[in-house]
Length: 171
Image 1 (spheres, rainbow, N blue to C red):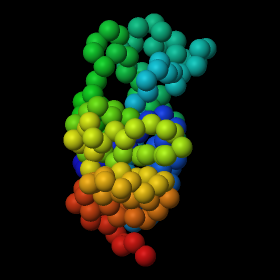
Image 2 (image 1 turned 90 degrees about the horizontal axis):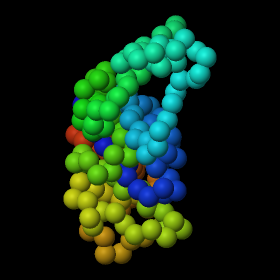
Image 3 (image 1 turned 30 degrees about the vertical axis):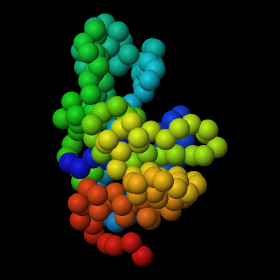
């Protein structure tokens, strides 16, 4: 599976870019999955539900399934937090995995930069950033700089950089 990360400071627009980029890539015939790193404790389960009872009783993994979707919850229970590559081993193979977060990991990343955020660029400190999507011109940046609102250009870059073949080309 090919991988491209979206890295940037909070409020830079990573999730918005993900939401807009997914249909563009899928519309070109690619199968795409996503992975999101949470910096906080999160729970997709609810107290009172059977799956919650299973998990709170000590199950290492709980799978919940219906006619529409299935989810596998794996409790870490004191083990080290897995990295993106470890987690991808549990995913069904697709053409491309887009990763939001995991910004310190060594996969190729597109930096998402928004000038109004007032934060410095990340790419000078991260050799795995291969381009920057920004809402402003960035003179002096030697990496490709893509307009943050030009989803077709960003999709073209991701496809080219990852060496993907699509069902149709950009219009």
